[in-house]
Length: 457
Length: 70
Image (cartoon, rainbow over all chains, first blue to last red; front, side):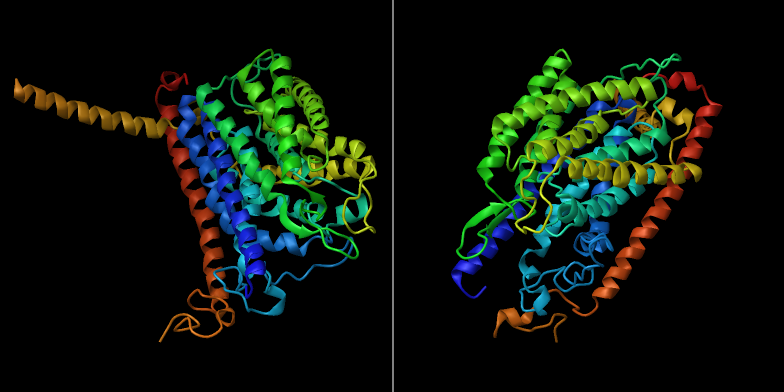
């Protein structure tokens, strides 16, 4: 920070990530509105608080250990090496706080950007937990959900990021794994984790007829759902931009060429991802409207699923490729959702497993074919992008780090009797006690007003 | 006297390093934070279990059918 140019680069980078964090906050606002809109009136307050409180819990745990996991585990450990030293990311590091630089050499570069970079990853953590939140509404206990939220938000997704969304990750090195905007590392894992919980948690009362036919429990406030999804779209812009490194010398060998890069330090541009974000959103919306026969809930969700389906390769795709991938991805996730729902009686209240999980898996796999042979990293010794690596990657994301931990933790919570609310409470609604208090308060006010009115004649 | 590492902004700013108070006690901050986090979960779950059990008992002893609907 002793000359203007290097200071400008540092402060621009600091500001760049800070701005993405603010924009990404809208994702969470959107998820809250979406979930409340999708829930029944008798569960609104509980649904809101369940999602809201994941913010502080995931935040503090991501500070305590989540950030360290990302930098310590890119080798597995013990797949391509041991644990990696990450002195800047341990909770007790001096650069995990206000710092002017000048600390130990290894931590020097982190003094200015540690907080904003941490926060950008943290907002992804909230997103992962929030994806799960929607699918389990109206029957899970808050305490159980918050343990699950910390698990996906501060442990499992960040392990997968260390493995497959890191310039030195073992999956990138050995499998050629490419997932630039997190089809797998956020969406597939969160969808898989949600499915693992849902299998144990079971459906809401009345969701399925005796013969297994699913019944629709329609959103009680479609306008809130629509605004919520629009806000998620908006926040998703910040998510895309946060996935990039804004300025990096990408020229191999002699010479210098500064560009934006993806997380693997491979070159891309903000223009590329802007083209592809909008084209995949559009492809998703068009396909969703068509396949759901104009159902607003599925049309909006399909816009999101379209982006997710194309995200793994949206740093490199042509915009029309992104659109076509989004269309096919949406048809795939919509059909699979309804098949799984009927076949296995899985009650995914907001379609999160489909929109994030199935579309995310599709996005990872299709990138292996469309980007076959592309470099996964500027390091030429890394494997190139290939279908097998992407398929294995999708299995790791959705199954190994998603479904399996969600299923095991949910089984433990169920075994302890703290996973699901009592049946009588589910029938009456989680807000029944609060509503009774409100009614009693209202009644007291009405009585007081009646007394006043009687006095006035 | 200062709770920070410095008492003025004179000299080389980079040499100051961390500018929060009580530098050197970070391990204690972390310990307090982790304990608070765990206690929070334990107390929340205990209180939620109690509230749900009470509510279930009330509902079962009353007319649950009156609560039907959305």
